[in-house]
Amino acid sequence: MRKLFVASALLFSSLTFACEDVIIENAFARAVPPGQPNSAAFMTLDNHGHHDASLVSASSSVAEVTELHTHTDVDGVMQMRQIDTIEIPAGQQTHLQPGGLHVMLIGLKQNLADGDQIDLTLTFADGSEKALEIPVRHAMPMGHTH
Amino acid sequence: MKAIRYLILLSIALVAGVLIYFQQQPQPAEQRVLGGSIGGDFTLMSADGPVSLSDFRGQPVVIYIGYTYCPDVCPMALAVLGQALRNMPDDQSEQIQGIFISVDPERDSLEHLKNYAAFFSPQIIGVTGEKSEIDQVVKQYGAFYRKVEMRNSAMEYAVDHSSRLYLIDREGQLAALVSHNATPDQLMHNLQQLLEH
Image (cartoon, rainbow over all chains, first blue to last red; front, side, top):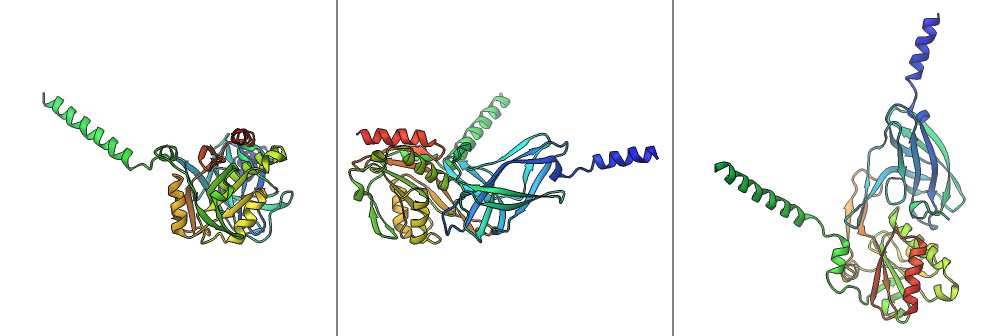
């Protein structure tokens, strides 16, 4: 009986889902002008677990389509591209921030005004999901927010 | 002896390879910009009619070239400009005119550009034009943009573009380039320098 207990405890401990290991901090969506068809969500993904995690998709009731994008500065030219996954290696943080990785909200069904709250569900490669309520606010570079 | 010849040939091939590689790289924006005299007058269209840079002779002007579907750097640059203007005393900020030039007239209607620009500051106007007119301004300012198809994306296409705030002095001459990563305080300082002249 005891053996069974230990075995099942071990089994469950190795079966933690990415959604439990990854802590989301400072998540927010960018406030946009009325009529603007898209916006972006930013956050820090902190993987406290022992396994690498990767974000594979996201969804929100405020947008028709939600995609993972990156933005890179190539010799002064900003290039936005869609990407399949956002990796969060074990024990590390991945920053989604203005000027870099972001969750792109395309086809907004409502205006996103400073102070609003929106839902955002993140799906990880192991199939686990994390449902978030995130604030809408004005974004400034490098964490300067107003 | 043979080995040395091989080494020399190998070195030449290597140098040639490196040269070709660098020639194919796009020139950094800064270099393109500093290469010759840039800037100058232009006329584009706003929701309230044509707008020329020369309309604002006597005032410092800040120009930003981008597109409203831009998720990041465009709203960031305009937010920095808006905040810099709000941080300044009114008698200073009201002398400054912001111009947001969209390189995506296909998606950015004049009405949308007007609302978009005003969202960041009532002192920023949004303008665009025919592709040939936009290309001319982009060339004049040593800027860069290109439409890039995004397969499998609901965005359909993105616009790669250089991202700079162009600071124009009271005489209509380009005075400085500021990154979209600048803080509002840095930009405010730059604008105040322009106001002193």
